[in-house]
Image (tube, rainbow, N blue to C red; front, side, top):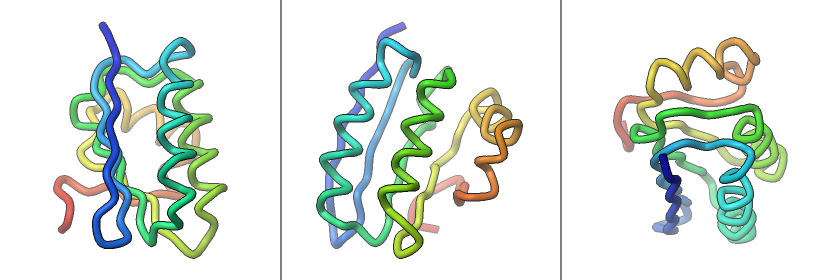
Amino acid sequence: MSFSVKSEIKENVAIVTMAGDLDSSTAPQLHEEIKKVVQENPKELVLCVEELNFMASAGMRVIIFAKQKLGSAASLILVKPQEQVHETLRMTGLLHSITIVDKYPE
């Protein structure tokens, strides 16, 4: 399956929406999008991942990169990850560094 990513910044909140499979071949697309929005110093980075079917370790690295670039001054929020993505976040321990919601804003 293909991968798509788009972003927008509204009221100091960066919203990145993804769909498809996030793996080593598609992670660079997400990495570029994250770099672009983090430069705007958002107070929140919202990753809409409801339509993300799969996330490989390369995708995890991009999320970790995003968290590091944001620092402690901003929140990283994942919206409605599918079970496989949620389990990957749990197994890596990344679940403790992010907020997961069913809908944004909640």
